[in-house]
Image (tube, rainbow, N blue to C red):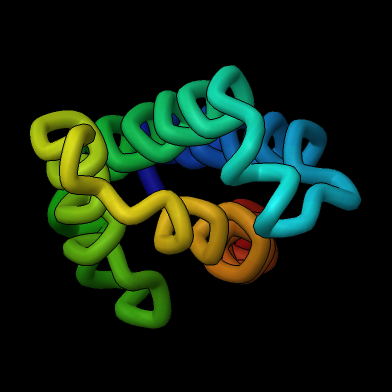
Length: 111
């Protein structure tokens, strides 16, 4: 992996860790009732997706276990279709998908 991809993956990991901290112990109901948290997590989703878009194709192809295209696609939905975005999907991403992504990125960086 080249240095640039390593830096980007470190930043992805940092963003995912930030989301984990914000969401710690947060139920779906609490999330849906907290406008500031919803917006903060959406910004994190956008940041992760934007970072992923900047990885080299070689890096993405070398790690098909990560849903790079879906991550970037959800970023686009979050950024451009905010008014129709289902916050339940954002919550699920933060509590289920991000921890999985965290594990995968950690393994990639350890190679």
